[in-house]
Each structure stands twice: as structure tokens, then as C-alpha cells.
Image (spheres, rainbow, N blue to C red):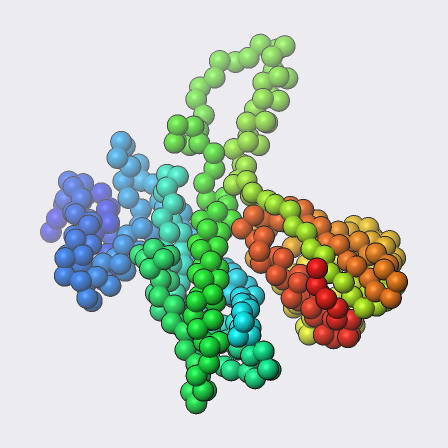
Length: 384
């Protein structure tokens, strides 16, 4: 029987890893299974990856003391599932042959997690994705197909991720497949880049607090302050405490759109502030209170916000956010309606959009608001 010692993570022969008692506090090599798996490949490589995930969550000894530091782990799977769907569904490309768009995320198998120990983040993500796409030729003929992405993983560079485009069974060959394979694949790859970027910035908020020289600030003994200095010291202490809790600052940007509708400003304004009409053009449940300070929720909760200012037939100002944005972060969206005699021009200005969401937000407004309104109520007109 080994004598009592320190509890350390032990990994033997490529197993999943478990805590064990090591005589005299000497640690076994925790990288044994990783080394073996890397050399042998195949199933062993899979075991090595699994062992790496498990070891990342175990408590390990501090290199300078006998105290143990436990890693903070956060499961990002559910967030990633929603994030990938919202990034991939708006993908749409046009060319001389016609247009192609992603219509469904039919499979999204995998997982994602983040581990943090002493200010260092370790990212794990591995996804197998299948998308459905529809192509429409210039003559109106529709074709259906699939996009398969088998290896979106932290082990692969984004440019190495495979994207396979195919037509559905019994569909005749069409140049739209080439359009989707070339231009569509580019946009899909860009969407995956955005996912990885936001996983490492927005989702990780709160996992790392500001540090000094790479180490978390700790309290040290203080000399009792003089009476006249106590007020200033208390104020300074409060400010320091507040600064410690500050998370990651989100870079933001502005967007602007302009579109024309074949209707009056009065009718178009009414579309944006009437619950039944909003549900009609979004094809989803919606709730809204069209008053200053009134809340709204669209697309089954994917979009939420609050009306800041309402000037009938002239202007709408609202706080607005996607569900996948960092908690509590809202952009400011302003819609200005201009009467052009028989038609209305809408100018949209958005401020405070997360920089990584710029393109998706513009596409979302164009597709789900503007195009949805035109198709539902017959207000179609040329785009500027």
C-alpha cells in the first residue's frame, strides 16, 4: 500500500485520467497518454484528445506552492449551437446563374468548452455540420442541395476546414452548384471564422479579470491611514474594486441601410408598430408595446428591445439586440421615413453594433425586415 501523499491528477496508458494518491507527492507524467496518442494516431489520438479535455478540468498543483488551483470550465455547447445557426442561416449568394441560400441547419453535432487556469484560456470545439440549401435560377427553377462540414475543430486551421457542396438526389446538374461551391463556401467559411472569433471574445467575458504583470492582484498588509486620508482611501478602494470587475470591452461599429417601399410613410410606420403586422412579415410570434419605453420581442425571442422614441410617420428609435449578443448589450437603431410622393424611403442607422456582427445585422435587417415587408404587403421597389 502506498503511503499517504498529495492528491494529484494521474493519467495512465491513455485512459481518461483520475485523481490518485502519489507517494511523497511526486506526480506521474500527466502527458503520457498525449505522447502515446500523438505517436500512434487512430483511436489513440482520439483517446489523447479526450484525456486532454479531462485533464484540463482536474485540479493541479501550483508550481511555486503546495496550494491547489482549480481550473474554471465553461460549457459553450448550447451557446455555440445557437451562434452557428444564426451565423449560417443568413448565408446567401447571387450570380449570373441565379441565387443560392442556406435554408436549414439540418445537423449540428459536437461540443465546445473553455477552460481557464491562472488567466490562460484553453478552447475546445469540435463540430460536424450539415446544411440544406436552395438555388433559384434566373428563370425561376429551384434546385435543392446540401453542404457538409465534417471537421470544424480547434485542431484544424479555419482554411483547412472541409466544405462539401452537393445536389440532392435526382436533382439535375446546374451551374448553381458551382456558385454555391465557390461563393457560398466563402461566406460559410467567413461565418465559421466569426463563430470562432466571438467564442474567444464575447462568450469568454468574465472568465478573466484584469491582472497586473499577468498575475491577479492580491491584497497586501496596509499601514493604517491617517484620519484625513480615510475618505480618499475609501474612494480609491471602491474605484479599484470596480476596475477589477470590468470584463472584456466589445468593439462596436455603425451600419446604415437605405431602401424604398411603394407605400405611404403612414402605412409603412404602422407595419413596424403593429403586432399582427410584425408577426405577418416575420412569420413568427412577436409581442410589442408601441409606446415610449415599450418592450418588443420578435422572431420567437431571437430579437428583443425597447422603443426609445416614436414620431408617427417620421421616425422610430429603439434599443435593439440579437439573442446571441453579450448579455445586456443593445444597439441603437434609428429609422427615418421620408415621403417621396407615392413611395417612402427608409434610412436606417445603427450604432453600437458588435463589430463581429456587422454583416449579419445588415443582412438580418435587409432580409427579415425590409424584404419580408415587401413580400408580405406588396411594397416591393428597387433597391438603392
